[in-house]
Length: 87
Image: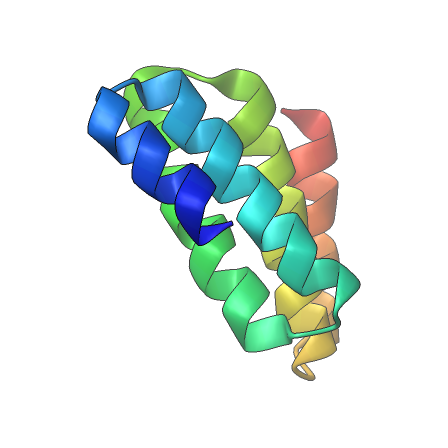
């Protein structure tokens, strides 16, 4: 994942970077690493919002919600997941 992130940054291609950020967040979600997933999802959400990438914004919001729920903030996390599904 670090190599993919580095290459996307080198290219200065926002879509590739958002794709790499999204996949990095997913990796941490699958590993049940809530805090790490949250960090990468936030980075993806910021970039996707700035660039108008609705798909990645929705995915980032859903993963961010999952990460909150994983860390004991269930109601807030579920709310964010629902918000992401509505985007």
